[in-house]
Length: 436
Image (cartoon, rainbow, N blue to C red; front, side, top):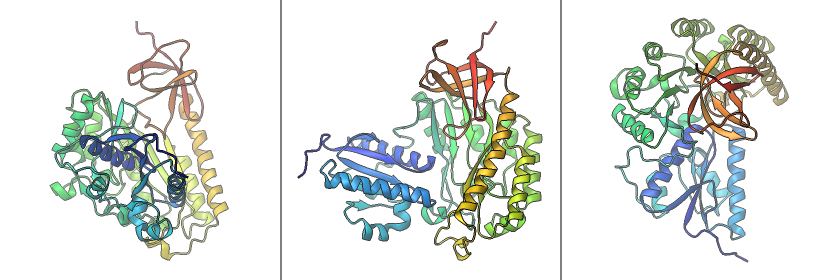
């Protein structure tokens, strides 16, 4: 028996996956609001839009389980309609339509106008930069390009997101100005590949010029760079980073592996020697820079010797921030033609070993921060602590600074100066500095 839905014609947008999906959901919500629709993010609503991820096995499972959960709610009369969009839907639409036919409609990553029409809204081209942000008010993602032209063997993103397409500088500046007017103080620049930015529009890698324009936006205090590809990195970006205090001394550059054999099979277009030389150049140009990277272990053909080489390199490079993933065998990628011959338990063990090394490195680097006074932005209050970040830390993935809430009152979204008093593997503890 159907129960009457509590929230009539309220659209609940549910976001899964990466920051690019967060951005896409925010654009969708902005469009819906402009058409007079009542919309919320991950709250109750009788109409549900699930923005899915289809990147690796774990993400696909989460997306499918979320769809099934909402189909049960539809069956029980708790929601009226369920729409599915995003990467999983782009990649597997025919299979999903066959396996989960009760979804009202499936849409791919480029079908926003069609999704809006199905929701009774019009796509408004004039809404440059109009989004309903879902992140804490002090930071927001700024997607500077869509898609990817890289041929990496393990990656399905070009299948789901298409070819690289840069957003013009003037459009991004307008968007940044609108975010700043809402109180956003930190822009996190995202794309499948920041390194490639501008090649399609300006016939050159133009990330440095974009940054020089964004630093002029009043109200923005930090600009952070995520997801740069190592091959062809525009070194003039480092000059801007060094010169402009608004640009965080931080770079997220996924390197994936270091063995030449594996890098070649991964089709990364680089070598151990070139990668190590590039990182050395980063350190020399901006000595204060925090480098975040991600690695993949268990790639087809990764031997114990390849893994030992990777482990030793991680120990030698002493990255400030590092994440490690186990290889996921993805159909329609180049690597899918290879035998997925590293057992799951060995993949996981290798990932654990890398993170143990990194945990020790992170602990040592954090110990060296005790006694330092750092600029910190307050993201939230959690339990007995205000939780903040330095310019060397990105939300959700990096270290946090914990400040005893019983001793000090701090406002979310504000910057403060903190003296670090203690440190753990991935957290710093501090007190608000007394400025004489």
